[in-house]
Image (cartoon, rainbow, N blue to C red; front, side):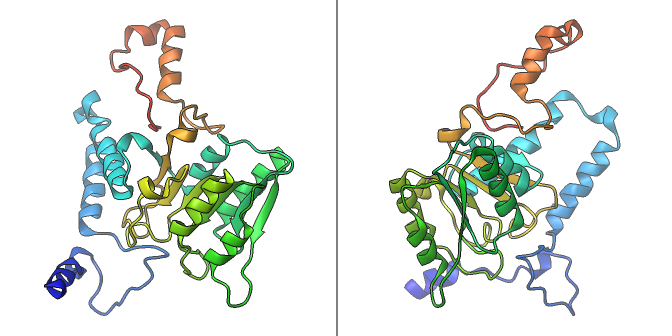
Length: 277
């Protein structure tokens, strides 16, 4: 019986859902996934629709976006209202960094040889706030999980870690790391880009303050579409990243200053607090 249940959980042959030549054995999805035929078809349909703007009405603007936010929310154990769509992990991490504070004596924990966005975002944050950037390295024979746990103390105010290391694919056991960070009072940020879609992750269990992920790896999507989860701990007063497009609340307030907008603003409904961009 157990063997039957295990077989039912195993993924069956999915090759026919992708356009992959018979002569190709592709194993580099951790870098860039092939596109599902259904994803490519959706993109082509969207481009065809965009080419005929006279067929697009106001109700057509948001349903696809809302459906995508909801799908990603369910994947990580959240809701669509917790999710923002972002063009890259660097954008998502920058948004998170602009909503956290630190100062001299505080540490920002990152891993050695991690993805550059994780390093440069928090290095700049440390320079701006006076905090110390703590780059965790592994000792010979030590796991990344052990190295992170050894580095956590009351000085760590922020920790930005993956659950799969970018350079070598080693696992970081977030089930062990998360409670240690909570006990230290640290803000906890996850970059799930290297594994989300191939490995399960539940924000209700891990309780991170934020999570970012690209869509072009194990989520089998296109470039320039990423995801940002924000918990209520830092999401309530989210500020915009400098240079970003105006938020719904900003558009609403600007309509009060522009008479022509006020007379043509029926599309602006009551502002709903969420992570919409």
